[in-house]
Length: 196
Image 1 (cartoon, rainbow, N blue to C red):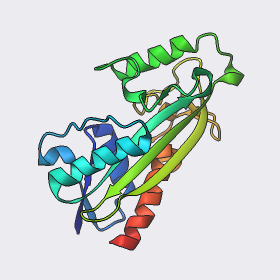
Image 2 (image 1 turned 45 degrees about the vertical axis):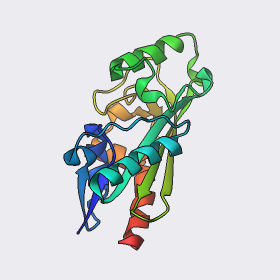
Image 3 (image 1 turned 90 degrees about the horizontal axis):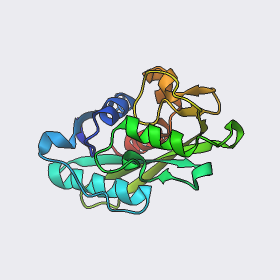
Image 4 (image 1 turned 30 degrees about the vertical axis):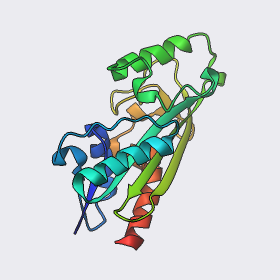
């Protein structure tokens, strides 16, 4: 069994990603199990920030690592919050703060013009190997009000085009079949199956 370290401090991401990798001969651990983990996400793209976190996790643990970076790109807001989705309302903000800011900025945007995409990039880092990148995208729109009680982040306001439900209205299992993160993880898992 190989140890695979998730380069994140977000416990929700660990809970979401680990089950998607359960079919692999890996033991999934969080980077925080090896010591303090808080790399500076100073990149200007999802790929750059994902790489920063995956490399930091690999250096901290000495193990293969994966990390994701996710962005929410809203057409009516010229692509904002984009790569700054997690801290859109400011440093130290909560999920609720971010949702309030988006809904306030979109208060006058009619339903037909609220298109958005959630994009996830996962980077796999292995010692002495080039990093590998995997990208998943889920198209939808921003709801007028919050819908559902599950999930985290922007899940209550992101409605998936194909299902007409918000991520927060889905079970974990349903979300893990259709989300941007699930799509990226599935690509990563397929690569890992060949590498392990």
